[in-house]
Length: 166
Image 1 (cartoon, one colour):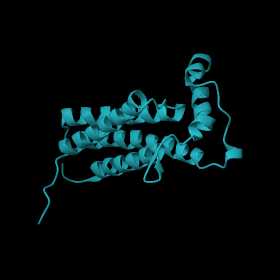
Image 2 (cartoon, rainbow, N blue to C red):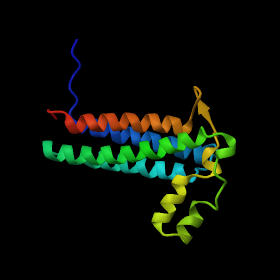
Image 3 (tube, rainbow, N blue to C red):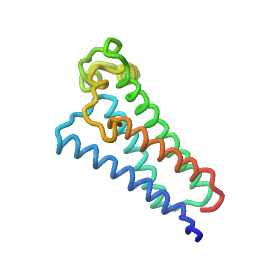
């Protein structure tokens, strides 16, 4: 049995839907269960929203081969950013307790008081709140699942960029 070839529009739409589902789940965790996002979680949300918006635009536009590759490259970059941020978050969660950075003043303060470059440095250094595992499923923390999700999105986006037929 041969599986039908998905069009590039269908693949872009699937990526957009996956991103929307991931964001809906993150918002449920925040507003439904009261889990406040740490600064690294906020950056992961930015990467997820970027991935979803690029994919939705690509699905609506339904570009030719060159345009498909350009959109897919944007998706590769957005999802790669998510892999980097989620990977850093998972790494912080696995640090020994004596090596976890202390809690800082918070993202809102940093955005008000520091230039954006310094905010990025502060966020990637991490803070104690980023090292806390609030919830896990099948032994994997929420940032771990986010890393898995971004890795899947990265692979599909890369495949979409390299495939010959739309």
